[in-house]
Image (cartoon, rainbow, N blue to C red; front, side, top):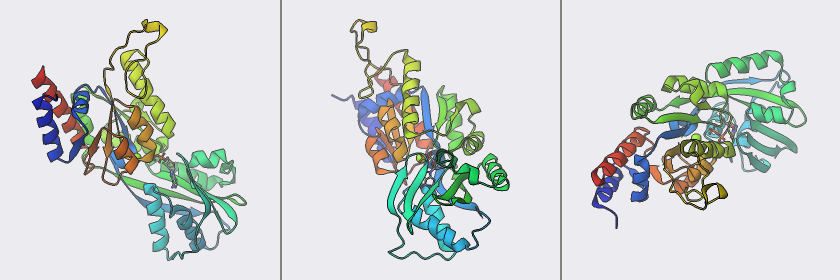
Amino acid sequence: STPVAYVAGLAATAQKGIIIKGGVHLEALSRVKIVASDKTGTLTHGEFSVLNVEMIGNWKKPKQVYKYLAIMEKESSHPMAAALVGKAKEEGVELTEKDEAMEHEILKGEGVMGVVDGVKMYVGNERLMCRLDFLKSLPPNLHRKTKNWSTSGGTIGFLAASNKGIICAFNVSDKIRQESSLSIKKLKEMNVDVFMLTGDSEGAAKAVGRKVGLSEDRIMAGLLPVDKLNLIKQFKRNLSGAEYDVENGVEEPSDKTDGLVFMSSKNVLMIGDGVNDAPALACSDVGVAMAEGGAAIAMETADVAIMDSDISKLVYSIQMGRSVVRVIK
Ligand code: ADP
Ligand code: MG
């Protein structure tokens, strides 16, 4: 049966809006040595504002471009999408029911795709534009401009049409959560090594990293969901020097270990809010979801959910795990 100290720990954390799905996860929290944190929506609010929009020369009708952006993004759940739809509205765009992208598709870690007025269009990051070979259609002055936006911490995106190349470039930015810096400082004081794992570009990632106290060697940018997953696997291997069974964190018997099964040391915590974090959350020893504003799948997959998405409660949860385990030992 569950020791009383665990029950007390679960009750105390629940009272603060931290849902820990069982004593075993509280125990795992006590052992955490690495925290891998998503950026957008986790260290930041995930509420973007549009700072700049630049259209390519011959697009004389900016409102039409905003309309394309809105049509492409209205189905997307990415926090950036809401900002672009809002911006289009500000620019006087009103969508009707028939303003819809056909064959709309989410391109993981890259953006979205759809057919508008019979033309295939894309909204997404530089990686996507590069893959589709559209970057060459970007005039040098605009290329310079996007580089500057990026170094000052913006997240850059593009709208492109398959028959015209890039139509516009935009720069969106997100606010860092007030609690992020202090929480990372405290984690470091608790001997926890903190990493940032993000799908965003290096420029935006480093700008946020600087502000929250993460050195450049702790920042992993431009990651696809599978890259986040693989990094978690790598962290787990590096800590234990062994291969893990992704499903349950128990070392698989192999020739090398002569069939011996060791329990996992439960050291790697992943915290995130997005659909793109779910595989990494599932693979980590402790998965923590930011519930407010986060994707349902993140909360479903995680072992711990922070209901109001206050990241200082991650620190509190690890402290609680440690003190409960201390009582029992
Ligand atoms: P993150 O939430 O860490 O940015 P994602 O994997 O969700 O990670 O997205 C990675 C990148 O792909 C984003 O930073 C953005 O540049 C681009 N992207 C994703 N979804 C969209 C979208 N709906 N519109 C434009 N760009 C997008
Ligand atoms: Mg996120």
